[in-house]
Image (cartoon, rainbow, N blue to C red; front, side):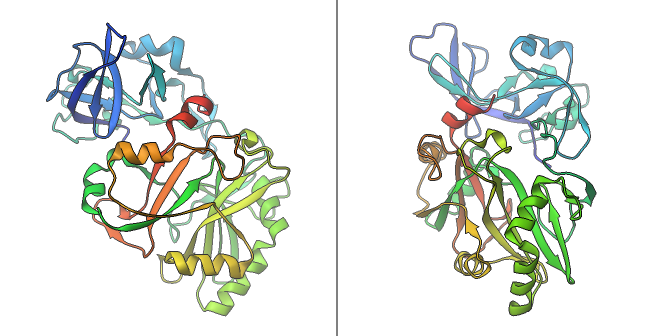
Length: 351
């Protein structure tokens, strides 16, 4: 589970040009706008990341006018409670990502050591956008345990990890703003999943199943599995009409693959093998943006994330995903894979 609220230390505080009442502070790899003098370098704070949904409590009521979100149907089919969503904003030209509170906001007995997770202590949830009708369709069960979920960690919380892997070569792909999709073959059975759920493959109303049928994914995956001798899954983004506002202005639904997974061996294919597998199955990849020798700060990686989409030069790309050419296990992340999200995308599209 993602740590949304945690105890962190203010690294630095800097003035904002032409701003008398506010300044920016750095927490982890994030810049946050706060009242001038509210926090000083070395102070401990409760830091809530963007996409945190703070509960309806008196301490957070000052956010109602700008941040309140009513009850909606979440991606797991359950109702998401109302609350105050923390998102990327711009104040006096400064991008601010997240919100900081003094430790006094914590309930009695909550931990206060640096790095402590206080998400549950504060009742913070992850905000999820409402699910459009017909997006996933009928649910068959929970996301299968024999597959990893698709979720990348943001680079702003990974400064030690970035330092550890400095000098390593990564391949870079465009992060597409779609809906996470997984299709697999296991023991001769074909299945399709959304980000969190196993779907009913007999559902004629499901957008996901329309994509799977149009592409003939069941036959493609079974043929690949038979040829290679292991069960397989592909993971990617469904994009196009009816998905996230179709920012790429595509005429029809499409699937762009970013992972091929050996289900039998519970391992991701290395990048060259993944490219070959996608070509063999006759599928399309997410845009490939070349390689990068990691010698960058967090701020530099975020700056690199800015730019327009390969799929539509009039649309800001959501960001970048970086992975090593050969799969690497990291002590903190598990699979070495992370994302840098374009702040201009968040400001323009992220409500």
